[in-house]
Length: 404
Image (tube, rainbow, N blue to C red; front, side, top):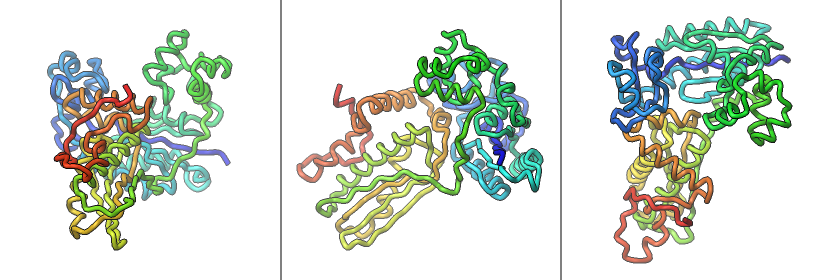
């Protein structure tokens, strides 16, 4: 059976949400992100892009390029709310969909063309989202995820585009290699160094040469350039999660130690989120007492993967959950309702140094292991309770790489 995969992407999502709150922003160059000179652009309107502004650009540069623009700090909680509303509309309309990030979705419509034209179905869903939620959205339709995602990009803003079966290579050929999902700045520079600017150049290369040049990633780029992508749409209702638990050899009531362990767990899980380019919207803490009674408390949060946001949430949940004041046998942390798109939401930080700090720490972890850089609270957790260390387990002190 011929696959029919649609990709839907909300246009300038953050900006569109802000315009719903304030209609005076319509038609104006809007820039969202950290507001200090050290901040970074998280998103911008098409009007702002005309001035050369783009995501991840230093806010100071954006102000120089467009001094009369409207600069907004951004509200991750508000964006999460609208993302959930759009998700609900999609879930009511199609049987199988994947929420790839806060503002983009894949729909598997395979077999539905026998009952209802796929292009018509997605077109009506597009109109429904715009009517009920008020947000503009674009979509692409083809036989696989890669071609549909590229088609969406070509259809923007507020457009739609179908690539018929057998036309994938011809559609991709004249486009820039930057259009291929997964081709970042470094890979693009490498390809440009080889004289490769258009996708057709990759199509004409032997796949062995691409693999030799860029390794496994080169082979994946070659496949995508040729319109080959067998990856399935992963059902959103599976609700993947990340979790970590610790059972103690001896039950404990050492609050400082417990908080230190929770801090270390949260830090480790947050690193895993960033490594997988994921965000969480639900945080949970679990406690099992010495009598084996188990209790869990969870809290929805604005999509994030940042330690300094998640750790206070976890510690607050622990404070609210731990009411019995008896020995604890096990504690755990779980992040659920995960979506992709970790980078963009991190750009709301006022100081670009925070994002750069996470990137630097994660580079060390990638090389030396996820415990090579950690907060003092987590690092000292094992020693707390065995000496008179007054450390309370909640300080945000960061220790340098212990192996350097």
